[in-house]
Image (tube, rainbow, N blue to C red; front, side, top):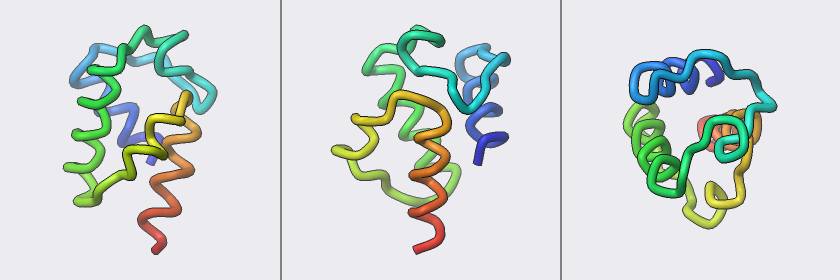
Length: 74
């Protein structure tokens, strides 16, 4: 999960230096449009659909990874 998200951020936003505690807004400066685009790219990569209410509450890369793991395991 983490490596895929890292690759998406690198390819689409030029962001390379992240870890699980990286905050989308505070550390990366992503706005709500950027985050929505990231969600779409993740959905496309994994062929899944993320719950809007849940992903809007995510603030870090680690939270997104955890959420993706639970979705994929279901």
